[in-house]
Image (cartoon, rainbow over all chains, first blue to last red):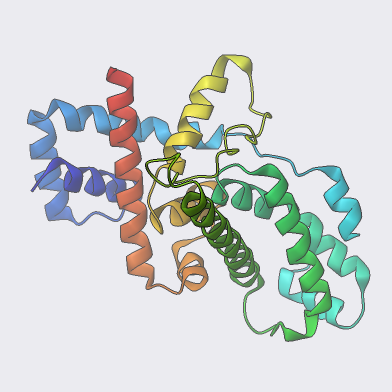
Length: 67
Length: 195
């Protein structure tokens, strides 16, 4: 198992989709892997960062042309 | 009319109610534009043109929609197909240009050269603008179909089952791609943070 796979498991865990045995294995790996600990922190922040991304607005002329 | 479902609005529109069409347009104008804008690597004008095309075609071909099938995956499928066709036609033009100017360039650019110039300029606060732009660019680096899946789920809020309909994939496959995309983004972001 490599860190890429563990990162995918972290994502699944955030969404409540990780199997219990995988969760145990993930916790064991996280205890000894600094890189994955950092990835997990980033993942926890990512949802908020995504929410803060701007909603881009189309030009108003596009609205007029369709209407 | 505000509390009617998309499908009910489409039925009304099929019966000639233009207010129902306007309501659908208002409901989907910004979500579809955001999806197209990002799908097209931040080409604002192209995304606006495609947004218009989609609704003009919807108006003309309203009777082709089957109201028994959910509207949202249907309209996102139309948007995605338009977006991908546009990217393909651009790739074709770029390939032709590369052949014409083979002596001047060593490799075909992945993106149109005007991409950065066309980037949107409506990011949020000045303090967070750089971070937001960096995040947008990192999402843009995701491969297909992970990028589409990430855009549709994380940014547009479509559930995996609807994305599966849009992309004609198994929902489990969509879920796998999504987790892989999120993992990849976090690894890239972690690495960038250490630079």
